[in-house]
Amino acid sequence: MNESTIVGGGVTRRRWWEMGLWIVLAFAVGFFWQKMEGADRSEFGGHPDEAAHYVTGLFVHDALVEGWKYVGGGMKGSPVAVGKEFANDYYAHYPKIGLGVWPPFFYVVQTAWTLPFSVSRTSMLLLLCGLAAVVAGQLFSVLRREFGFWAGIFGGVMWLSLPLVRAGYGMVMAETLCTILIFGAMMAWGDFLDSGKRGDAVRFGIFAGLAIMTKGTGMALALAAPLALVGSRRWGLFLRFELWLGVILVAILAGPWTWATCHLGRGGWVEPSLSWRFTSEAIPYYLGKFGRSLGWLPLGLFLIGVWVKVGVGVRGQGRWVASGALILSVMIFQSLAPVGLEARHLISVIPSALMFVVAGMVAVVGVLESERGRRPLFGVGLGLLVVGSICPPFVQKGFGGFAPLAEWVVKEGKEGAVTMVSSESRGEGMFIAEVAMREKRPRSVIERASKILAKSEWNGTGYAGQFANDEALLEFLMSGKIRYLVVDEDVPEAKRREHHDQLPRVIAGHRERFRLVASSELTRGGKVQLNPLRLYEIETQR
Figure 1 (tube, one colour):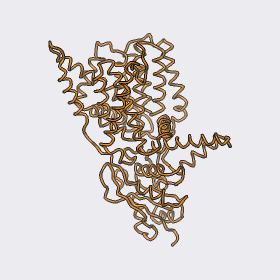
Figure 2 (cartoon, one colour):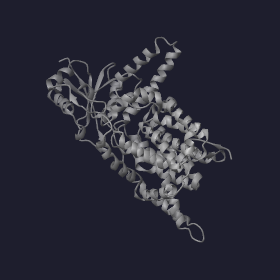
Figure 3 (tube, one colour):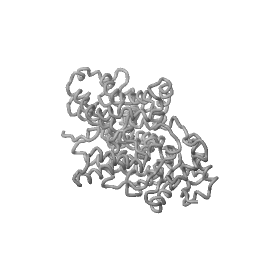
């Protein structure tokens, strides 16, 4: 039978309409969850990096547009000089760009989407919803081939409904795209372990290379692939040219960028290098988060599925061995790389984990066969119980308050005036993103108080205030460099620094110098904060 392969493979031409219909339905399920948890009503503050991902995507989008104008205008000037000037100017306007610290492929995908569909909040959330639906399609493809149509639907619904996954595609973050690529790479690798075909190795190389170019977690594939090869015990493949062709493709796609920016990537590390102190905390953390991300009932089915598919004495099929190797490799990688302890780093292994959950469920239902055949009602009941158990908790994203002030700056602010925003990293990013979203870029100049009034590393460590006393800060503010101030007085205690108290104190002591022009209710995680956000215009002529 002829087959047409999409990410993950296994979709026959005869059944392409089933896959298409399921992805549309999966998109609807994802959209439902986004609406339920208020992603469309929240600003880009669901994670400290969310606004930076959005602004970096805008930068790539606008750089491509400017590059097209540059070519159409006869390529006047050195392309390197023109590109560098544009990048420096753009960062001066919107200082929340992480390209280099993060790989570029997520922003390439953003640009491919936003060029025809706009850079609005709704557009970006629809992109993330579509990416989540693609993963649901991958799971449907894999599980349908193994267990049938309804098993595929069940696996996709579980993927879309897990709280950790819902949070991932409710934010502008790279995890969902990275999951498509990592899962696709390991399914291709599993097919290669079974077939030894060049096409499967090529698919692995392309998906793995793009995964590494999307997010650092993709580097876990460097461990997952050989681990799966060992687990499959197909030693002869090690000498096949096709295997090394896949490796070469990964090196071509991801090698140059990774080598050139490896020193920048460490800017997000919480430790200067690998350390046992971090690893000793990370191992129990990620083991616990893995279990809780699935829920206890699915976790039990997962363990049964592992025993059935890759347990002791079982010669597993390639895709199952690859899935087990991926879960283990990501857990090891995230426990070694000191990038912080965050459950979102496990999103990329959830599809593989759900494969085993479904396998465990099928095994349990199979045990309850009677002489009259299977008990379908039991299977349906167990499936509903599993889905019902994984949906809670229902968490509102609920970050906002900067948008009205950004609207004022764009519409009422004086051309060329500089606005400084004082909040924690998440809040500063939200304001920058809201301004950039609303205007013809680059226009407004934004400064971050965390960078102007203090010094710190990229990840916020090494903090030191810039102004020894209030008088020195007042003198700086009266110098005319800053025209507008956005002040957040309710920065969480864990994120609060010296300048967060110093700036409101200076404003309170010299109210005649700071004219309140707008204010807005501030929410964090769905909770309204005590003090509103305030936008001041600095009046230096007194």
